[in-house]
Image (tube, rainbow, N blue to C red; front, side):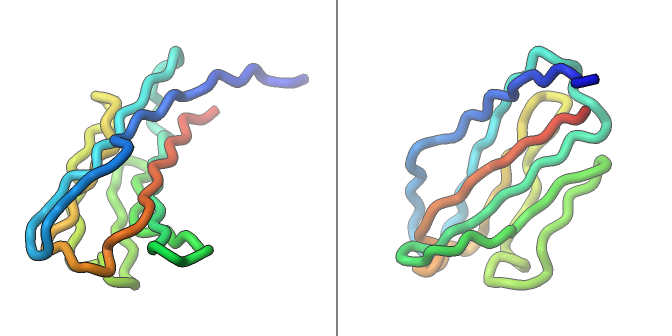
Length: 111
């Protein structure tokens, strides 16, 4: 049989501005009509301005945040979310000019 699928609505700011050397919070809130399961996962991707490829920079799974240990964000990122409060936000510290680009928050709430 086919199991029913319910959408998750994810909300982020359209644009976020910061100055070099400062910090910025990338907000990600979500809503689902279903119970937030223990298997919820949140992934942040970054696509640098002028690049065609997006890279994974952060992952939350099985109750633990995982900051990717490669790339320019590895020492500058902080988990600020709380899935039980439907929040998948992250903070980026010590902003650099190369941080300009598109950040995407992806939320999955299985089953």
